[in-house]
Image 1 (cartoon, one colour):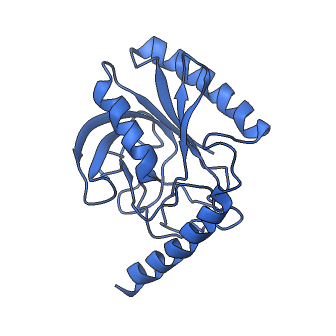
Image 2: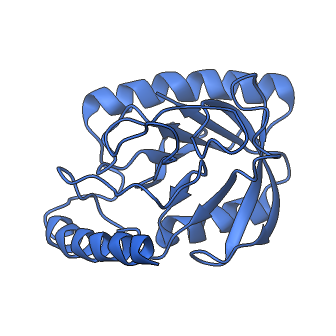
Length: 206
């Protein structure tokens, strides 16, 4: 209970700071040129993978955990428009020796760590967090093939700021390995996924 109160208190401070930062933010999808270049390279590889494997080629989800946790690092990439459609802050797992600035990655059950690699976004289900929706994730590589057994899912968390909070970090403790995003972006993701005719790719990398 004390841990939950501490995390909630940190999020209140982040939200206040985020609102202040948000007033001077030109765009909710603007990223530095270096980040965008890397995104484009990953998106190109993701599109080739999706085309080859029968996945959705309209959009994919890219998560760059090399970025500061106070920056947007979950991206909905529009493959037709070759651009960022939506972007959100994204929490990483708190397991092992993960810190606010450096996640430790693991595919082991009970590790509470994030796992690198490509995922197929699965079925929609109820979540007690955020907008009360989560999507199952199926790991497609040796680095994340225990994701479904570990109950690693894509979901949101209501206290997550909608704007960047850099240079502050997101606190540890809100993710046990799941990519956790803002409610605002999760609502948009939910709309896209409900309309998808083919499986959607989510790719976590660092």
